[in-house]
Length: 201
Image (cartoon, rainbow, N blue to C red; front, top):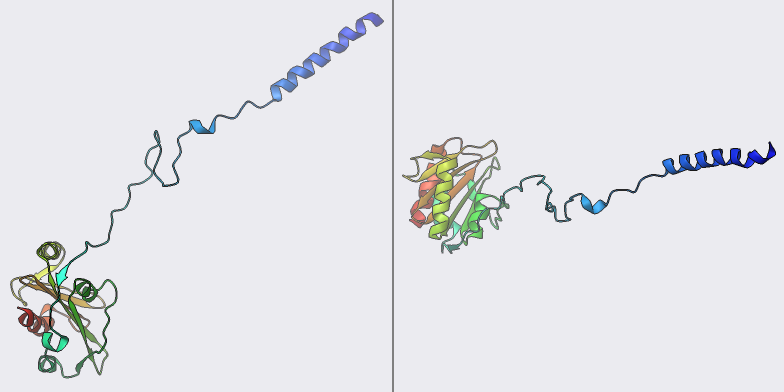
């Protein structure tokens, strides 16, 4: 009987070894086998794109020729007085970025502001002598997105907004624009627009 004890002890040891081997985790899969995106956001081979990139919303750069007139020639003091005697020319006017006036200045144009001395309302008038490609592009954009009006001639447009409305027209390659909270309809901007168109026409 004592001679068989080592054999009986060997069986539990073998069983324990097998159980421990079953508990050892298998090797983790190679991390390089799964396609990932690069730091630039572009997927590597085998990965599907996550999203279509948004188109560039920046407007195309416009070039133009200096207009060569000042604000008192664009709209004379008598013309603005006839429109409303409360409006006076604002000195050192700098258009806010993104406005029609700022776009005109960026194309070597002129931008002027008149302020109502009673209400504080403003009228911004701008003009730019654009190159032919920029003129054609603006004409096409306005024809597609704005309301065509005949108040300023055959090539006029008007858009009414909550805070300000804008009138735009072309006199050859001259692009004329006027924006004001005082423009409730296309006809409200007509005297200003016709004066500016005549000044550059």
